Length: 120
Image (tube, rainbow, N blue to C red; front, side):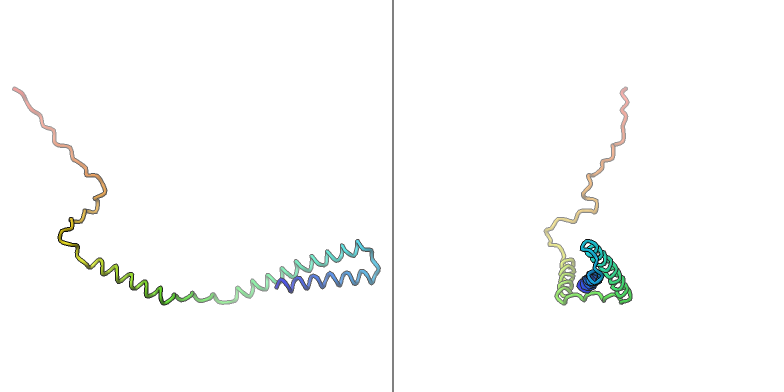
């Protein structure tokens, strides 16, 4: 697309130079007109090309999601099966009992009830 836009702009600039030579304009006026023709044609053609590309992409349906690799599917099943098998194995007989869920917190000690002693 960029090549087409460049060729159109270059064609417009060359046409401007040819007309300027035919009409016998000066060198500076010819160069100014050729540069103006090139830039105007380049930006107009580029803008129209960008609008056309965006318009074509909007009307296309989204591409389908890529399918997973078969190895990844199998690896996922094997990993899940291994986790389930590890959870099903009972702990050894000499293993310490499992800690309660709040084992990470320090134990809270309740203050002992105050006792009063009476001296006689």
